Length: 189
Picture 1 (tube, rainbow, N blue to C red):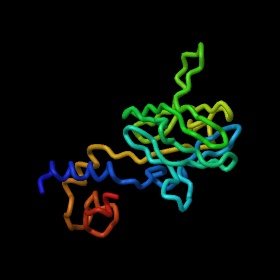
Picture 2: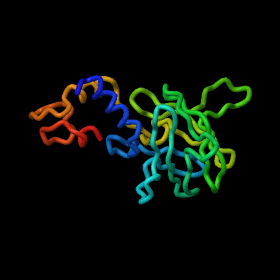
Picture 3: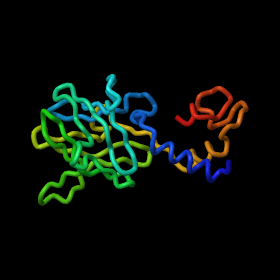
Picture 4: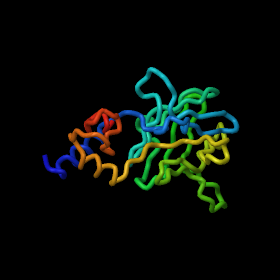
């Protein structure tokens, strides 16, 4: 199989893969903070396969959890949901049955400040979301007790390394993320 075909295959697999991609380092980088609602968990441990956020290059899907208000749907049917412009600028609205709409790119009349939620190149969320019934949700990690939300990021170097080492068997391969001396789907996932 040529490298070009392999890369296309890998990208197609990435697109169809539905595993959550929040808190890639398992260091609790999964929380936003709302002064009126408490912690908002983007990676709740629940049996439902839709629990947790899934960030893609065009949208954010899944359900997040806040103990004081319940589930928040990031992609409500027929309403667009939370969108990603591919550069990490989020827009659109999520829906909470108990609280209504949450805007991920709020505009304050007469204030030129960009409050919207963004994802930087390292996968860190920042900015603010607004809900009419709950107020502001903060994604600025330094402001919220060293918590925050982080998403797994993969760059072209990572994909290139995986493609170059695909199906190789040897000790010390950098793409062998599940250390079994083989580069395969378990390393990819």
